[in-house]
Amino acid sequence: MRAPLNSASRPVSNERLGVMLRILSTLAFALMGVCIKALGDSVPLGQVVFFRSAVALLPLVAYLYWRGDWPRGLRTSRPLGHIGRCLMGAAAMFTSFATIRLLPLAEATMLSYLAPVVLALLAWALLGEQLTARRIAGVALGLAGAAAFCLPAFAGVLPDAGGLGVVLGLVTAVLTAGALLQVRRLTMLGEGAGAIAFWFAVVSALGGLATLPWGWSWPGPSGLALLIATGLAGGLAHILMTLSFAHADASALAPFEYLSVLWAVILGFAFFAEVPGLAFVVAGPLVLIGAFIARPGRAR
Image (cartoon, rainbow, N blue to C red):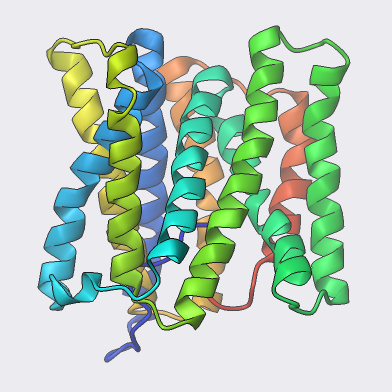
């Protein structure tokens, strides 16, 4: 659900390498979630957002420099469009990290896959994109999965924190879809992917920094290492994903995007002894199939 940094045509096709890079990117995203969850409540949410975004700028700038897009690739003629995208994306980062804290890693990851379902609806309503029978089926399956996730919360089966986590996960999906919709608009208007990614990271870092007056904690060596690892894993994951699209078609890579859920299940069990519940088992297939069907035919 994350847009690549660059959509340039591939000089050489190497599908096997592209698939391997895509798998590594899903693993890096999952490891970022592990770092966030391991921090727990010991570090304020805004501080985590700041480190995730500020540290990720380091590999991002290095990548843009390597591509020859630094600094001219940062120019923009649509500053207001970038502001809207950045605000929605930064808000989604806050709610996403809160969801990871409140829910098992696998369930928090699964809820993020509702974003393509919401995006299909927003693109139809706001951009006039055709809502085909396939897209309608994908939306219906995704919404059914969301309902399955919500039922335990509404029935009072989940603890209060779990119910809040589900709500925040749904909010994250809506915010992410809105941010991706704005990315699509900016791309259609000729904005560079490097500029979109860079300014988003900058604004998100500033958003996290703005929470400093509410109190940050100064973690020990292990906490600081986790904060830095969060940013490096997120930045590296984005770059690996971008490189994968430089070597293989989006249609060949699409099935491997959903390995994030498998990594989340494995890592959640390995690090936090989390076992997915019945809601995950019931809702998971609905959400994943719906996301796969509802997503566009090409990489966003």
